[in-house]
Length: 393
Image 1 (tube, rainbow, N blue to C red):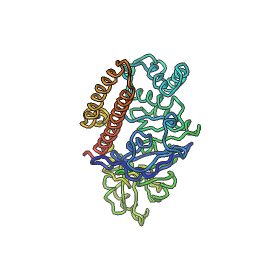
Image 2: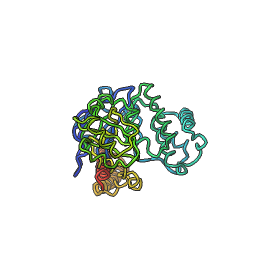
Image 3: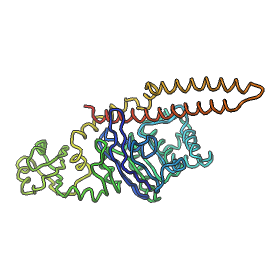
């Protein structure tokens, strides 16, 4: 379905993505995971042709990206982009119209999805009256209403309560059964572990772990120990037999050194804890994440969401960038001069159409330069914001 080869994206001071290749098959769920600032969102933007890669290419069913492919894709961005003053049903129908769906059919599909999310009674209410979680549901509906073959979801569970997370997971499975390809980015390792057929873990713009979930777990061995206990387990990570540890209240996941076994660690545990459960299991995706990325990254990602909720999206800063301002001034000047000369020429008794044609070309080129500048600057600011979020604290 989708193949990306050797993607690279570098901005002025940020190497956001470095030689990323991946393949997503129909009828599968592909998890793009990693800490904040890893390059996930920039990768997604390149997959969707929102940001052009500096190097590498993306193919859909073996073909390069074309406008026709756009309508085969559903995209849920991490940032919300709904018209807050519009009514729910009108908003969904409007976006469906952009995908070529007629109003009557769009309303029919919209009501079906609103009913599934228990939002049908909200159809005539304004978007701004909804909670963040319900706005997330509406954005999800918009992303799949046109029945895309490929669904790309950036942090789809953001703002959803546990009940609605279950509903969304069920929809994922339905889409998979319909032979659709799903790519989703998430920080929720437990969710990724339950849903994904394949994962790709990115850190600092590079792929560090990839493959089917089964093969990834096999790669990291069987030396993962789950404990349940009474007592203070804070000492567990300092034991010489422990490579890494995720410690909760009365529960811990330990990854032991390759040479360590139960006889090496159990005496130290029994000496200080009342052990209720002692079990060697497959490593969890969370423990693999910690092993590869490091606990410090996990601390960062757990601290960042609240702060990020108050941060302005990179797109909002685009218009203030000097390059965008310069391109806009050039566009305005080209439009003023061009339309003036066109008007003068058209008013002549015998119009020479070469001048209007030339001026029209100048104006179109200025429009192209402005749009390209906006696109490039938006991608650069987004990558910088992503990396700053990942490396704060």
